[in-house]
Image (tube, rainbow over all chains, first blue to last red; front, side, top):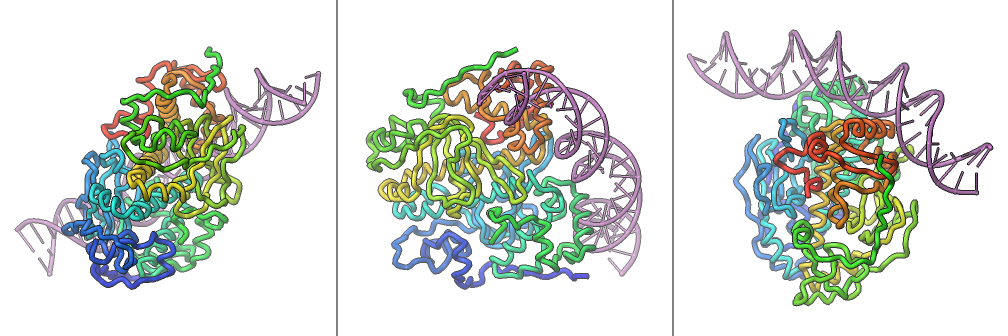
Length: 270
Length: 270
DNA sequence: CGTCGCCTTGATGAACATCAAGGAAAGTGG
DNA sequence: CCACTTTCCTTGATGTTCATCAAGGCGACG
């Protein structure tokens, strides 16, 4: 059995620039000084193009750390910002009147959320910390004025939104066409890919979310997730101990996830 | 029984400016001359702000009419444009390796598609005309350079993307939480709202898509759609004859759709 | 008139939700 | 440190929704 890992996420560590990784991300644009707090993200990563006069100033505002269960924002509140996750992660939760929950997304270290609520001006979901989480708030208004000086920054922003739409499409296919086993397999692979993108292990990591969260994300019952885990373990695809996961057989897992189609489900293929 | 309507869509008709409608759309920005072909959309509707020096030139390119079943673009092709539907409508179809289909969205008169594929540069889905359809192609590259002169145009574009994300979230909740009856009811109401937005009747219109398409959109079987229609008709919620639909009892339909939550599923509430 | 596409209706079956019970770990308060 | 509760997870038994299978109707079109 696998013993739970201590995967401490050091929020302030220097992130080395990785060209291969960069190809999949939007290009960094803001200069190092301009948005130090969110030093992770494509949007405002360190080491941006120095000859680019992106004198955008200090756009972002680093927030005080959130603890597990804290709200980054709440469903129904006014939405004026986008957020960058610097460390930890959040779940995007929609709660309907009758109390049923759906998790629309998880946003982990280096990812951006809140794009979908800018146009309506209201948060349609809550964002809740999965663990201790550092985030950075970027008022859209400030971003706008920064973009007046530097329209290419808007291109960035649009591309991030574009990517999010593609991701949603992939998820829609996953939920619409695939059954529980394939959904869960794809989910694990997605997490693994995102973990790797952050410089961590692809095959071994800790889930930052509960089984319940996974279930609500994949539109399944909690029990179904449990059964999937048991099943995958007995099939030697995974080793799982509490929230620690090891992928034992990537190929068979990918086959289960049905990711062999020539056309990638956008965000599950990195 | 309802007799099928002849709802001819006159693509070139003058669209009167409606402030109430405008509030829900993005603001028009381009001047009348700049993008005449796509005279419908928020993005380039006639009557934009005249003092705005949006000398963007003729961005769009009107395409020759598509007939039912024609492709606007194909899954796997390079994606360099966004498209505006001037009349008619298309379905966005994802086909997986094993041949199963999923319809990710319908885009009707006045709506924009293709945003999600810009960042990856590849069309992850095909867009297929539901009926005779006029569309306008906007090369993203041209849009970009136009935006250099007029960054506010990028704001538009971003807001459209933002809205699309919100719409996807709503759909996700619909598919994840609701069962067949609620899905179908929400779908009908969504169509009704979009029909109204175009200046047509809210309560009486023609479906431009087949039962099969609806089924694939709502992630249900064709037969289930049939049964829903029969059921709703017998409950006096709808009158349906072939593809002609009349909404007889909006309130009860909305109740079935579960749209009473204080927080709107974004695009189903207009 | 026959064929085809599209739709409807009924019968059966499967996947997954729900219900129910219990275990293990972590926090809580004494 | 130990009872106690609570949370999270697992496992088994039953039930429900919807998919699938099968057949036939109806209009369109050649």
